[in-house]
Image (cartoon, rainbow, N blue to C red; front, side, top):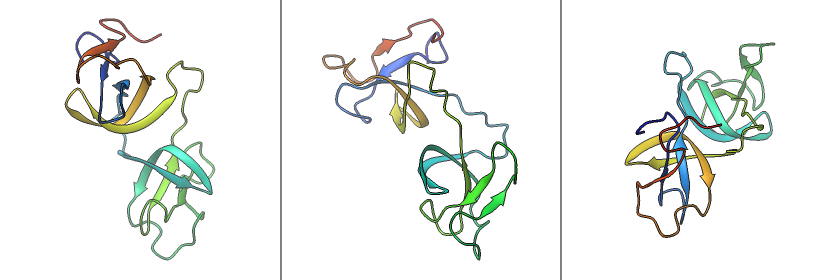
Length: 137
């Protein structure tokens, strides 16, 4: 991203006319596999996989890691056979609240934040469409 950590680009991989930026992922965290799916019976936009094989003999929804913590993880067979994961909290006070994954500015992005569903109707792929050179407010 030129100039800002959340500079947004036109991404037709995410949809016709979509303007989005890639959310920074803390790669120093042990839990670095991000996806989306159902965790503990609820839809989750940003699922953090703690262990790919942590629930081989446990039932769906069983606590499998971080018991009692804010990042308590559950067995989720929707995410894969034996997957233990928790749902990352999303800041719903932010203007940009649509989260997905895809290609932004030519690179794979695990957590894409959609700024505008129609911000790039006449712009080319990869064009800067929001937050140019400044941090997102």
